[in-house]
Image (cartoon, rainbow, N blue to C red; front, side, top):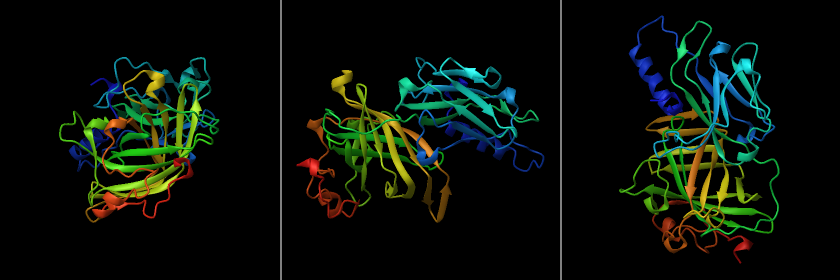
Length: 364
């Protein structure tokens, strides 16, 4: 596999396998690990540096970084047509490109700081990927073989104000793979009601399952997703802001704890959970559906598997989705402007967190 196509969960699996194979070897010293330090509030702007943290001092000459658009296929492989925004940047280069992107390694060799400059101005609000190339090594020459990828996006600096937006139905799908940090897919159908005078929105997110005929785990097409309105389903509330961004729109939800049980099996609490992303109405793009893509972030997470409760640090993951055909709205799904959104799910014993609901004034 091309190193540019090896994603973090693949790298993690390889490291686990390697560690298992070397169990009992007292002198084994693994190569350096690398993590993305999530920005405060999970939000990067062009003025927020990106920081990578290494588990030990690295050899500066072994570090190569590429920044990609999040253009991947259903198997999360980079598309061959993807063009890097910053290509194979090394420390000795100083600035990479002519847009002010720079990298600096701390004196102790354990923290890399990347200054964004204007390098991502044209892709603000869109999900991006950081690739730390394979070959990263420590001072003793122990080399990390696979590339490692991290999700992030640059949030527009100026948000807010009136919006004039035309969506198919206001309902869209949202899918994010939380592995390996949290071993679940988070899939929802989110209905949003936007106050066009202020850009403020209220959203209702309902747990959806893939249908048996879905073409792949990563598929987020509405036709292959069904809302779970049983006792294993959930519906949660989001609030936030939609901002005009050229011909597109930027969605930023308010940070709030998300406490759900995914598929009725895995209880998950995502602290300060929020969604950010770009909305491209089909009326502007000419596509078959409205398209949605961005990143989700949480300051931490707790999930339970069996009797074990696991706490994890801050995470950020890319997500994508599409608008739902207004002629194919899921029956009985909780909707923001419904007087009783929990009627079906609540009646079945599901976790509908919209009891005693009062629709926002913009519904009138």
